[in-house]
Length: 475
Ligand code: SAM
Ligand code: SF4
Image 1 (cartoon, rainbow, N blue to C red):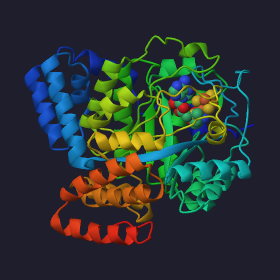
Image 2 (cartoon, helix red, strand yellow; image 1 turned 90 degrees about the horizontal axis):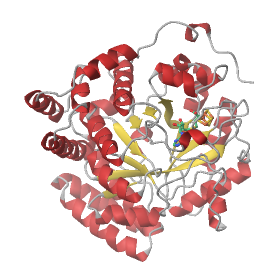
Image 3 (spheres, rainbow, N blue to C red; image 1 turned 135 degrees about the horizontal axis):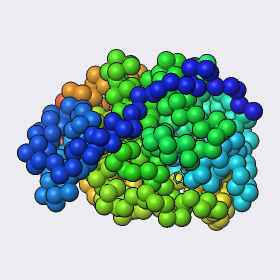
């Protein structure tokens, strides 16, 4: 069994006030267009919005205003992140779980799932496959189980960093796992993780209690919502928050994400979450809750969610996963997304199974986008963006406060775009199909032109060394 949760998490309030959020949302119905324009002006200056302001944006129905919001979200995304999109691969380590979250295929009582934990040898094989596709970043995912304690996680992290086949290597390992004690996070920090992600699932207390049966470790809302505070106290600068959309009212969840951001900023000297995720619930095997949930989010509202998060927190990274279909990804990426996964397989051992020609249906849930990394990359280039495999940020300690300091004045341009071009060049030389190579070289040419002359010269020099065989070059 997992250890006991500390007393301080067993009672008392947290920073999410459900009643206040509903009041703010209800008082914001039919917002005044001139007030919305004022809020958009503030957002354009890349100032984080206040809850009352976001509540108003969430209540906009007027088509013209909505179009203005989408337009500004696209502009902010480009101003802050340029045209680059960072790619990563999820890697499922084990699906044993001691919880019974009603919406998840991995829940303890689901007998249709084959339980499996990768051995270190099997993990190496999975890493070799994602490296062979060209990935440089991975997020390791674990069920919540006493087998998956911090020491086990450290072993898996070290194994992943250790696999270096041909020119492949994973340069940044992120984690999506259950909340830990500070001591546990410290071990992960020492093993060199990038971001630690925890999704609150729903910020609405009553719904949280309904979906996470009493007695389960996950049923403790407070332990989970302060999980990333403990991570930051342990020295992990980059943390990722998220809500699983479809469990409760989407407007409430956006407010929850904002309050969580503000809480982290206030507690940690202005450093908010590094990323926000906004997965929509997908259908999962023998998981009745996932069949037409009451709060299912439409594609139209999903677009609003992405744009409003972009407007509310201009500097926070936003992650869109392959849960979404290619058409949806194409439409919402320009509205604010900075990271996507591709070529993903989310079964435990899923990459190897897929190579053998079998699509595991007994996964946690079903993916909407099954395109390969190569195909996704090609489409991204054709749409005018540039794929990035950059991992320089955390390796040059541009994380937490430092990252925010660079990010806020827009300097990320000076690092992100050059590093996107350099890491993408590596990808094109080592992994791309001929068609993707053609589209990719075009994209590099175009984006080089957008750099300041000094930066362009520097990048061109570095590109030459990559062509001559050097790797892992960044600014
Ligand atoms: N077990 C850990 C936990 O619950 O925090 C981490 C791994 S869990 C597999 C990762 C995330 O998957 C959860 O936080 C949840 O948001 C998401 N998830 C669960 N069921 C899902 C479903 N049916 N569709 C989409 N995402 C789902
Ligand atoms: Fe277990 Fe996480 Fe799935 Fe809940 S969401 S059942 S904790 S794997």
